Length: 331
Ligand code: UDP
Image 1 (cartoon, rainbow, N blue to C red):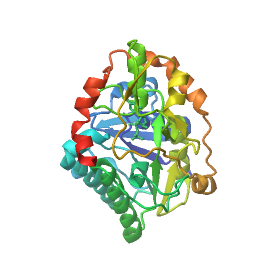
Image 2: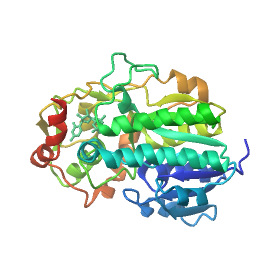
Image 3: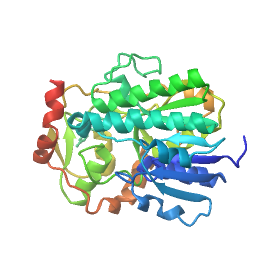
């Protein structure tokens, strides 16, 4: 596969996107970042901004006209741009369907019209809901439980439809709990790492949900970037691949590694006690391996803790308020 292929990375100014950008630049590719900067931040690209092979366009993936001006023949499209987080997706479902389903459809149609060479889509493990099978394979039942999960999954279906009808080479990566430097620090109550690190930095107790014995398949962001690169270089077509560590960790283990006091919150209705990716398929298809042990990943996060300076410090009270509508949907 030619190193000269240009790579269009939507959402390239976001947390995961900025690591993916770095990885492709490191391989010698020309990269065009397309980001509307609604949640992405150009500062996430500070360390690569002088690279002459990097271009950045502030534009929205739902803007078909703008996209058609940006995407060219033989480009590889890495489509990461999306609205994230559960709670706002319950409050504003239309925004989520617009950004995540229509946005993906616009990118697919743009890719088809332009004659793009590959399309890699970042899907979410939230499509599995509360799984029956652990570790959870790609063939498991699909049970989205909130609009974010439903929209991410529907967009995957659209991806495969474009792949089938127009023969656009399409791969979907179902990302488990991605963590790493530059994960988002502000906005909605969300991913546990940001919540705990901001609390630790402020000298406040970490808000452990339930007993803390629940486990998550945390996968380090540089391993995810490697999976994206592998998928883009592959000849896979019409496949969904789990991207996880395959080694779930409990919240109590995370607390132990971070160090600090805790306060317990009520268990969340409808949340899985465990997420655990079956990663045999991606291992086989891409020769991909998760390379960052949890302990090392957490150490890297602790070294970067000052990133969470000024981030919202959630308390049991503000969390109860922020999750009211979410829990009402699930009980
Ligand atoms: N969690 C927690 N305290 C928090 C936020 C999250 O103990 O303040 C736990 C939560 O119960 C879950 C895990 O951390 O088991 C991961 O939560 P997150 O929202 O990051 O991801 P998801 O639940 O969507 O997998």
